[in-house]
Length: 214
Image (cartoon, rainbow, N blue to C red; front, side, top):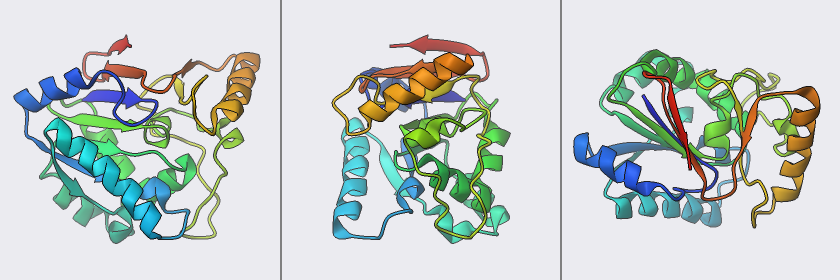
């Protein structure tokens, strides 16, 4: 699986995504459940639609899947996801996204296909943080919110990468000052991380264990 990990939006290496488009199916699934912690408003919907438009302008045909429709029915989710080879998981709240992945079985599905060569997992901010092994420390930026049940949030990530992405580092972003605190904590505790400025991207091939940073 090719991982395209951006700090914010599509980042500065869209040529890699365009190359993937030429060699694979053009349809991509967008996952926006990291936004479920906030009320459904026109502004929220317009923000999600802007992400869809950016993918379409790049050449993708976009299908939106709401993981809430699959809570407690991972078999149905697997059946529906098997139609697609590319995923784009947008930013929001890392812990909310993690719980949506758990309740729907999206986490198990992604881990199950992670060693297959013809798949793409792309995303930004919360959408990439959730791939790390441990989500501890990110709560300095994201409030640990589970909007679905009273169950505590998970701090275990999907474990597809061996570092913690720290997006919005030294960037013109509202969370950038808080990100500095995360970096300080990770340095103190000697936690392996990669701080990303907005527009920076990490590209990693999980099958070949290759990583490039831009």
